[in-house]
Length: 460
Image (cartoon, rainbow, N blue to C red):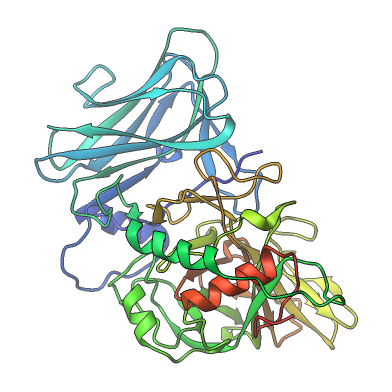
């Protein structure tokens, strides 16, 4: 089963920024030039031959192109390669066979000048994803027509493609592949050393043996900002409801979170920022009356779990997903409390809760990490969900399994609700880590690696 398809919300330069803004329904404000990383979804081709598109089976939805064999091709229009100079091209691919084959990127036509070549080797499965990169020393500048051409020496399908990206080195890549934020290895080594030196607290005999601790949070504020997806651009996003660090806005950084001690979460040592799209009922914002951020493990053996590094960030869900979510479908809202669900909205996408019940959603984040990057171009590729109870492949590091349990003080009605991002299926959440290292590390050591249920204070 596919770990996840990754629709990307990466702001592009020039004309592509306007096109992406229109697709996301955002308004761009005046800004200075910044990262020149262009990400192209594989399924956004203008023309193709022999290409199929599939929908992911996980809760986030999204699409990738599949069933690709020798001679198949896709055309992408107006891909801005920027100014002259070195360019890093990347492709996110999956393959059970590896071909052998290649993905060629050519400019102008299917037989035009070769821009980059990505050799395809087995990744572990048709839905097990890996990112391949190529360095381009010279290239045509500005908007170009690109062709992705599939080459293989054997018959049959040999690769699936999720996306392509192009970076001219001015982005936030930390010296690695485009859009990837490299970890400060020295700081991470020090954090790991501190964590491994910690002595776990004795677990009382009556403790529930579940690997878990939490932060309990209340609503803080709302802004049309997103410091992960559109950093430095106030008002460039749909409305978000923030909880956790009270300073969070478009200009938020790791340093600004750590410098601001005000948080709507308990414990006070958690200065992280969390946010979700704002919920509306009849045009009126309905803010959560409580969010519990659970940190746990879904691994049979959670002892290998390590804390998040400072500045780590990721997104769960897909703001672009606009598909029906009737009862029984994945990623749905539900009713919690006495009486539970009593019906569905007129469009079938929302539950109607009993008078003493309320609307709830649980949003689950990936729990395996590549161990190298604080962020990635789509804010998801550096992480993955466990496969067969393990972390491995490109994401070998077990991190706490984060989930938001979001409660709303409303029962709803047949009129239903809406999100600032659109339909119920567009629910998503963002996590920007700014825990105190010692506080987070001790909780992982005491609660997760010992499979002991802890409270918000980190005690049993």
